[in-house]
Length: 388
Ligand SMILES: [Zn+2]
Image (cartoon, rainbow, N blue to C red; front, side, top):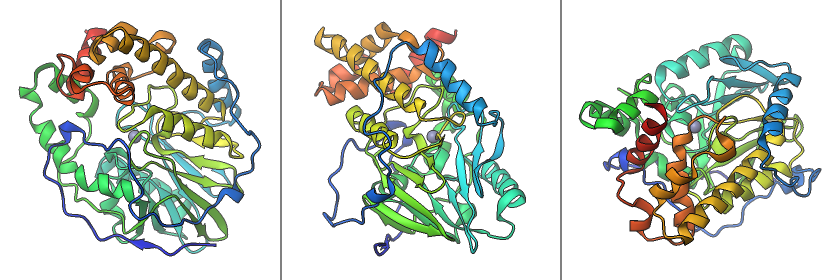
């Protein structure tokens, strides 16, 4: 059974600056409507995920072993993860280096996410045309969430149907590439924060990117057909952002997780609550899966979900302890360090993640910010402390 499309007119652009990072915390479904369920597609192979372990030395090893078991080295470009289903990977998976996906259909193909700028997206589309879409052009795009590294290339596919959750579409309207371009134009005046931003975003080109909003939005779940393939879109946010969606192919046992899964790097909790993200991991773990295409990092097997749940349990325990001791979030982030996660990239995201736990615990704004400024100021502080 398939529900009718919700047509979403393009939203006007918000002119507030990106720097404030206004991802919503939580959301009530705006319409209270019933939604088509695709739960029957989920084979409950695992009723609950295995107990996560903090002993990461072994899980890191296992994770990489699972990648090599798939026979797919972590290299830039398209890799076929099931017959006619492709992942497009961008090492090293750090800031902005996101993955995308392609589901080949007889009459038209579905693309999961565009990339951070037009050049990278054009490069990806050219490669996908070479390996998969010459006989079945991309007619549908799914944006897994509103971060620019998953949607700023939309204008190159403006003729396609572009699908996202309602919450994602609302966030996309508030964070166009022009705001990031504006912020990057001012990095020389932003001191340590500006140097940090240049380090993580300086290689991308945000100039001249026209925002293209989703043409179709949904809440909850949506089942699609791509040729004769079943594709289930499941909204699992708010977690990483307000409107996170995963794209599941039950017959191929492949899932494109967007940024619900970071593999090999710290996740970043823009929206939360953290408990929702843990629930999203458990929901993923309940699916019948052979390949997980993460939003960032190499292909993974289900064990990556245990690692993430373990990370969030550790984060919540460590940040909660310091919250109860009266430390501000920046003080707590500095005090916690990276614990057993020193091998994961982008450790400065702890500044944002500790704030998220504090928010979940009802901390005052003063406790969340301490003497720090924006989230980018806070991350820059941790970054230069570790890298200067
Ligand atoms: Zn991303």
